[in-house]
Amino acid sequence: MKRREPFKFMLQMAIFGSGLFFLGLMASYLKLARPDAGFGKIDIPQIFWASTLVMLISSLTLHLANIYFKQDKYLNYRILMGITLSLGFIFIGMQFWGWRELFTVNSSPQVRTSRGFIYILSGLHILHIVVGLFFLIKIFVEALKRISYVESFIYSVNPPNQLKINLIIFYWHFVDILWIILFLFLLWRN
Image (cartoon, rainbow, N blue to C red; front, side, top):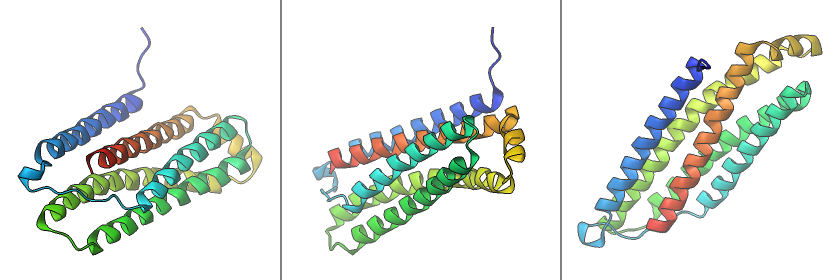
């Protein structure tokens, strides 16, 4: 029987827990978000559409960075890691822009209650993005420290370094899929 990689297993359990947490929040929203319970319909900010596209592109750039890393094309790897990082920060900025848009809408108490759930769901997702950005920054800084081909190659063949990169890619794809699910859920409910 093949031994599991403990760090990957811990990440999978954390992702499973986060998924259950968000599922619980969405179930609560469905249970509570009835017009007779004081919830009103609210339009999702248009910027959330663009931020969804940014999130998808960031997953693509990270995937391509990994391909270049495995092909020993370290300059392309560093560039795509930098783009992924930038897109992560842009996503957060777009979410705050969407929040500002939600906040400025004159609304009834029912709409304010619905808006609160949007803040909670997207805010907790931003927290997950911040965690991912922390580890992306660490990996990006390590890549920038190894400019020469030899240093980059030695770094790339080290199994713990490969594991770090694979774990952040796995996590980043999770937050991407999580946002798509949350966004579709919010579109459907509102």
